Length: 144
Image 1 (tube, rainbow, N blue to C red):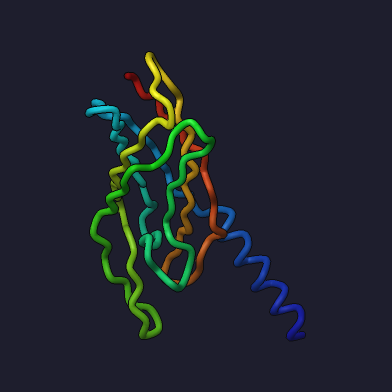
Image 2: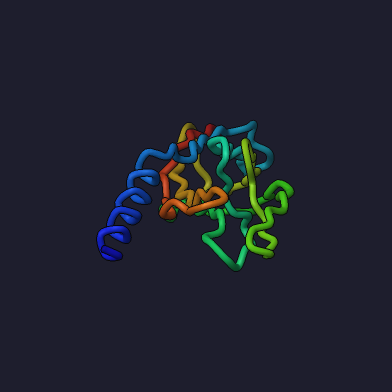
């Protein structure tokens, strides 16, 4: 009997995770400044969910990386997190909408347009469960 109840709970949990909306990530280029390319990365987080800040020790931190070798990150500025308390533990999270400011620079000077691929890792959780962490590839076009 206990095995049947446990199986039903696992199936119900998996179904609720599969039906939950994911975090939407968009990137937009801003005007270049002196060979540096500012990019705004916007996270739209579903109601009732949060994603972790970049420095959490519990859970999967939000992380942005440049894919490939043509560009590298010069700086990243994360917004202030909100404190979320669960089971007596304080976690630093983002809710609703969060915007990260990223500045990239080319490894070699270029002219014209370039498409930059960003790998953006997040883990969405609510007060009961966490969805599996995911890494999304986000494209942004920059112009010199």
